[in-house]
Image (cartoon, rainbow, N blue to C red; front, side, top):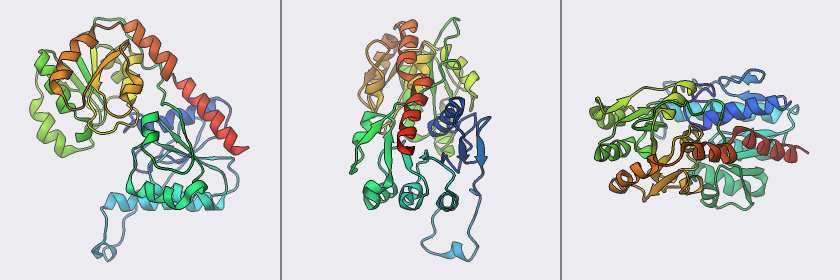
Length: 344
């Protein structure tokens, strides 16, 4: 499995892609497969193949006018090392590209094993270029949702395997619930500031948790809003984050981009916490009237009206829906079938 070379796949997870890599690798290992994960860290029982993501160009090279940001260059170097290694090895049955980088897709024809790639994001120029050049040679494609699959203009069908969550970790806690909660990467396109605005309109408290991926946005937009009614808990581990989500009456999910899946929705429902959010990207595939309320993207007034309606929904139903639709075992089994079919 090719994971992120920038972020560790292990907990506390930097984002949904890293959680996906970790849980899928662990789940495939539990089903009896030998798994090698190209990235900084691997689950117990899996082999980790570290990647030199810290590489930097020389001072002379950095004077080039076309020089990209350091992190972009470091990512490119890391994935270049991965595909060079895989082009030389013939002891893998199948390669799962679980990164969002273009090099594994572009290199598919020279790899020594069949390639399966999961499309975790909407189209990007680099990925579109690799797919356009590779055509059917890029291997088997999987998307995390129907809406995300529909955004990609590719020559071959795209299989849809929804993301899954560990319902043993994300679970109800049986205690008193109060207020709203928002979790996820703290970046502009996830728009926690709109969740804060909606909670304020309702006069309810809101707790936030997640890694700060955009420090400027956090300092200029989020931090000034913090206080007794708006609390930021930092980047929590899964157990602590699940406890926080399970203690809330409602989970606010506020993407202002075409959300490819929305893992926080599945996590919230597994905790028995209903969802109020924006109908962006894949969220209408995940949230129906049984477990939440969706409003037009960016409409804070509508979200504030939907918040108490969602909070009144049944926690037991939310949990049942999460187990049936988004259980981790269901996702791992689907990938197991797909990877086996491509390896045969």
